[in-house]
Image 1 (cartoon, rainbow, N blue to C red):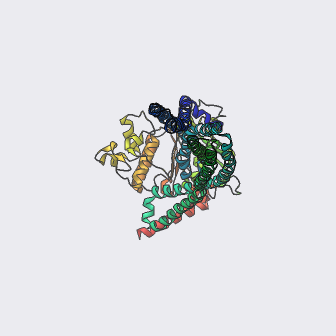
Image 2 (image 1 turned 45 degrees about the vertical axis):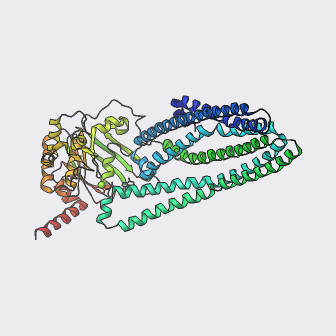
Image 3 (image 1 turned 120 degrees about the vertical axis):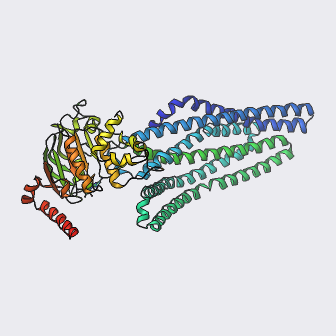
Length: 580
Ligand code: ADP
Ligand code: MG
């Protein structure tokens, strides 16, 4: 909870003024019934006359106005403080998620992170708003009304004292049952968000597989589960109101009963009784407010725990202990030394096993192997998207862990297998690689990636909007933009993870040629499915089931590496079938 103090500080004045203004309202509320009893007893039933009634009436109006000012002001500051709090909290939470490593991200579903960023923060915001409005008001009203009741008639006030503990117990039980149900409810909300998010991002796939029905069912279930869990929580909570009203009516009845008798005996005036009934109502309302605070508090507590989980997630990949923070990648040499890696640390099988590999500056290296053999995993270790479990990865003879992440990743341009462009213009997307690139530079690298041609064929050229409301690109066009974007970083090491799979072979050959001619000093690693994509590489690495099955040039591998020749012949067969 200490973590959240930080978010209170900037709004401290509002956090203080709000409740003070609420106190003004409470004082008014407590005084009002007294004024009322005075009008009745001395004005209407007594002999003080009309003038007295009018003065007291005006006093009541003024009190009401002051109360209103207090109430409105209090509400205003409560909203100001709580929205500010939520704003800052959300910002920090988002920043924390940005710091997550790939491994950290793998631990959460996107939907869950979205719920935490939105709904959970909102729950805390509500709680604070309610706290500020009611935290002083409820006990203030309770104590004020109790004191007034005792001052007016101590014996009658005993009736109220009997009811309060019973009522408190009832509220306690209700909330204790409700709390775990709120946690469950937030989890169902996660599922709903994940389902929705996945569906909306992949709506095209859903449609092409005619899976709408299935998706509807899935959504229906998630939605239904959320409703059920909300109902199960609310079912408990709704008991608070009837219990409260019941207590209120019974107490009022008892007060009127005993009070009436006292009036008959002459121990009490009717004005006092009316005031008394008012205080009974106030006391019970204040208890209701307390239960509201606890209710929202317990919801917010469940949410705060979920937010804390994100904050407490240890970022498992940092450059805190880097030895050479200022070092940048100069030459582009890469070396894997006895590298072992797996994603799930308790699984027995290695995803990469005993990898030893040296790639010299400026070399072009092809990586080939069946799907799932660990090609993507291998290259992701170079810019430290994941950390090795054993052994080490060196860039320019320095362990990647000893670079600052920024310098390392600036030196290593990687086009991930699953890559995306963002909404915005083409040039905005390309300039992700280098914000300050001139237009000429952008054109140059787009030309190397064989993207310039199709970009200029668009009416607005480089200023064509992508994504929603803009043009939709073909898979191959997207891949070429992603390559150009990576090239603009001018990295010493360029990794293309299956980045031309959707590009036709002729265009792909052109890309390879221009990469070879224009980026002589850049180390290039090309993962490919087609042997033709890597056939002219300086060396080809063959991966099979997480192990290196062979390293060498095409001709050598054909003779020495069975996995390689198998892939080669299977692809030849297909071509022959096509030709015939
Ligand atoms: P390739 O690129 O050669 O097709 P990958 O490197 O993507 O192979 O995957 C190697 C193995 O690691 C596969 O068994 C795959 O299921 C697993 N894997 C890949 N990415 C992840 C991940 N983020 N979390 C867990 N397992 C993964
Ligand atoms: Mg892959």
